[in-house]
Image 1 (tube, helix red, strand yellow):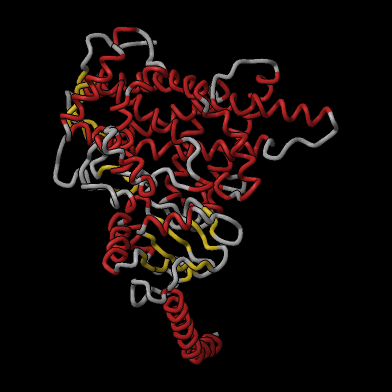
Image 2 (tube, rainbow, N blue to C red; image 1 turned 90 degrees about the horizontal axis):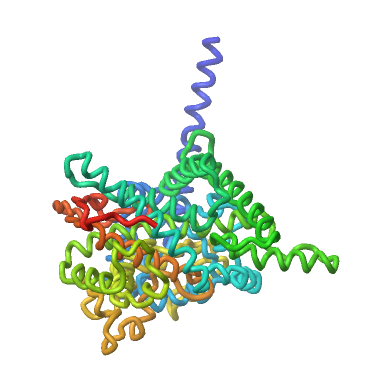
Length: 510
């Protein structure tokens, strides 16, 4: 036994130089590959084998991406390079170069992934991974979800949910003796209920909603975790949670099909979608054809999950930044309050109608400036399916993960971009939304531009209109409280802590 152990030890000692040589060779090859791909781009001179800079990115995402932006700006080329878990990455600060990425989402150029490991996390049935005519056809089917009639239906739902949560926030503030309340998590809870109700309406029962919230929390944690796809790890739990969410939403699509086929009136997004879908399915069946593409229940569930993901954390980010900005700019707050009160009163007992929302021009400008000033999803990751010549002097290598920064674009072109100034979107003389349109990339650009941007802006307008009318608020301002942190979209560092007090004499209910 002792002899065998000694022999094994001797074998290990004999093999050690070969193992060390193999590791050194791997390290050398990886460094050479990185430098070949990096070319003239600024980036770290050496990278940690396999892991690269992933530890810095996970430990402090804000500092990591700020460093990428600083490199890209200092170099004057608008680009920077790095290395994350075996993948070469390119950060794009320049708006026009970002447009080149957005305009070339196709099989032989760039693939939108939404997250560095998105395809493994989101599943197969996902709008963001589609191309060409197939993608155009699906967006055509989605169009009825965002007509003026549909948006009006959603507005009434949104306001009922917002009111219920504002009442809860005020009650919580009173119970805490008027102490400041961090509203990031309450905003997130409100948005999750809003999304569930607007998108799935009556088809998502109480038990399903409770399971839904747990699974969505797992998904959120997985977004920020290392992509270790093994039992017990956050990434695996997130993947399993997404699968359950998609099945649940697929069930909602099936129930909606049955109700729309029976002649029911649309009450939520999936109803508006299924109204036309069941007609096409039934017409195909009459002539002996298979159902049209993208009408399978679980596939539809995957697409609805896309909407939920897009609406959830991005909206939470915007609501928090809106509250912070209104508190920081009393003149803006006063103008919003004056505009809303000229069109709607809490005493009316009626929700704000679509017509009144359309007349809130200044509040809409504030919403757009919130999104410009603090775009929720700061980066839009793509993978290069093939080599792509981005500039005359640099070609993005195949397999690279490319990060166009919509955050950096928001601070280019616009006069005095670091100032929060809704007038840039309100003044007919300035018309900065037109003049600097190519720098306003918060909703993306090209074929994959966000289809729900009108819904997202309406939600922000409605929240601000109700919040400033019903609540007196004051930020609990501390050093660094408004520094952006990633969760996974950017939010104020202190989770937007505010003092709340009821403003109106009678809280509305409708």
